[in-house]
Image (cartoon, rainbow, N blue to C red):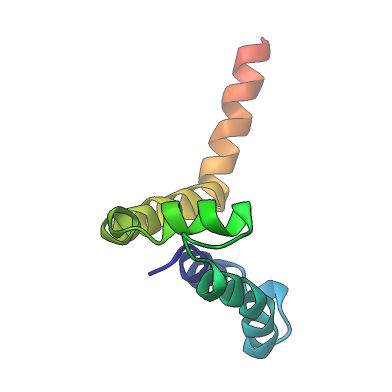
Length: 96
């Protein structure tokens, strides 16, 4: 799973309401996916080279499920109304 697929799955699960349909979401991520396939460690462009060395390595592929689960947890946590309300309550208590 590459980095952009991780973000695409998170957007599909939690932010699909922001897009009119699934086609818009796919179209949005197509350019990012093209960048991923084009990036190689031997590329001339430094950004593509750095991206490929980090995010196309075996270590990243081994850690990508853990990264996905952690990012998913963070999105769930910060989109929860109860959690946000507890942050507001703590902020109000700290001001007093």
